[in-house]
Amino acid sequence: MTTVAESIPLSSSSAFDVTAFVEREAPAVLDYFGRRVAHADAADLLGETLVVVWRKAGSIPTDETRARMWLYGVARRVLSGHRRSASRRTALAERLRLELEIDRPEPDDALRDAVRGHIAALPELDREIIGLVYWEGFTLVEVAGILGMRAATVRSRHARAREKLRAALE
Amino acid sequence: MHNIDELLSSSAPARISDEPAVRARVSSLVSATKRKPRNRWALIGIPVAAAGVLALTAGALVVNTITSDVTVPLTITTTDGSVVSCSADLAAGAENLFDEIALTEFVRNHDWSNLGQRAYTRALASDEAPEIAWIQALDIEVSEQIPNGLFGMGIAWTSVSENCEW
Image 1 (spheres, rainbow over the protein chains, first blue to last red):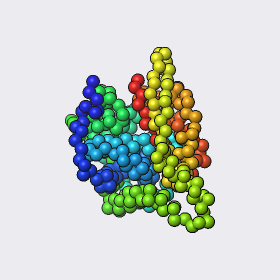
Image 2: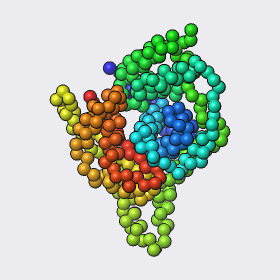
Image 3: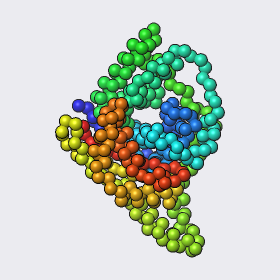
Image 4: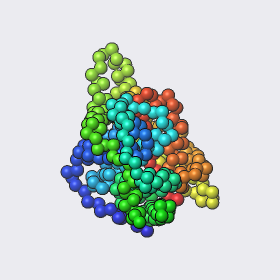
C-alpha cells in the first residue's frame, strides 16, 4: 500500500522561511475556515491557528508541500475544537472579525447552489475531502497527509463521493 | 452536460481574503500572534513588588517551555477483543501567560489513564466515519477533562496527536 511518506518527495530547502510561509498562507487558511463556518468565526479560528503555528514553528516541515499539509492539519484540529467549544473567543482577531461581518452577497447561480447543497449533504469526512481537493486545491495524497489517513482510503472515499455527486447532478 | 470536476471546482465559495482590507487585517493578525513569545519574556521587567509572583512564574516558565507536552500511553481493547497499544501527545496552551501555565501544569499532572478506552467507546457511538470519530472522540475526551475555568478569557487550545493503527 502506498503511504503518504512514500508519495511526496522529501525535497527540502535550508533557506525555508517560516515567517514568509505563514504570511503567504494565512489568507488561504482564512478562506478555508470561511468556507466551513460563519465568516466572523473564521477570524477567531485563524487567530487560534496562528498561535498554535508560532508555538510549534520548530515542527514545521521545511518542504513547501509538507509545510502546507502540516498547516492545514493544524487548521483542521482548531476547527474541530471550535465545533465542540464555540464559546471560546479571541480578542486578537476582533478587528478581522469586524471586517468579515460585512455582508458579501454572491451573484445568483442555481447550479452552483445545487452543487454546494449536494456537497453539504455528504458525510463530514467526504465533504472535507471534496473541499480540500476542489476548493483548496490539494492532491489526494496531500489530503491524506492532512487528514492523517492512508492515501488509498482517501482515494476510494473521494471516488465514491465524486460519483455520488455526479449522479445527483445528472 | 458539465464536467463534474469543473462543477465541483467552480462551486467554491468566494475567497474572503481577496479583499485588500481583509488581507491587511490578516497580515496584522499574523504579526500580532508572532509577537506573543517575546511578550512572555518581557515579564522579567516587572517591578520588584511582584518579585514573589515573578519567581513562581519564571520557574514555571522554564518547565513550561521545555516540557509543555505529555505523552500518554493508550491501550484499547476493541469490540473484537484485540488490543491496540499506541500513544498520544497532549498539549494545551493559552494566549494569557498565567492561563498557559495553569493549563500546561494540569495536562502534565492529570491522570490520563484509560483515556484511550474512553475515547474508543465514545467513537463507537459516533455517526462519523471511524477515522474521524476516533480523532474527534480523543479530542473531546481530553478537553472535557480540563476544567472550564482553566481556559480563561482569551485564546486557549488543546492539541492531541496520536499514532494508533487500527
